[in-house]
Image 1: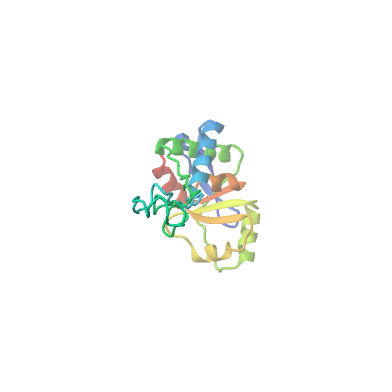
Image 2: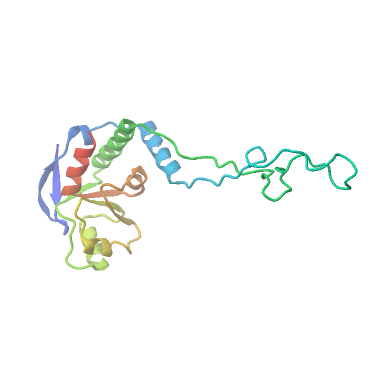
Length: 206
């Protein structure tokens, strides 16, 4: 499968071959939804966890005799009213991490990428480089590519000028091909990749 490849100014510079096994999958919302939930759960911080009276260290020996002391009838130093005792209604620290097989994650990414291609929202750029780190210059280039909301993925050698110019743009995210996830792909209309990023992606996802 071939699609057009562009320069950063929007002009066509040739064509590039796409692997059918990566960009020709039929969309399956259940698989994509599983990947989204997996990404969301792993982004949430772990909740705090504290110990109750059965978990703290301390003696269970009765502190004093049952009667005659004038005080309460305590039976354990680990009660919640004592210093270093356990909490009465402790935080249980529910872990939000989930597991998902690598093959399933890759399959879901294939569905998302195929959907981007099907809806003409995939743009391959020869090189993601600009001459100077100016947001105005980058906005014009993205406008030439008809990309007003885009995830931009670069390969192993990111351009510092491009990275600096993209920081102030509201609906643009510039990232490495090794650091994006399903939420990034679904959160932006267009997917812009450099030729180098495409090669890395195709080698990583079988």
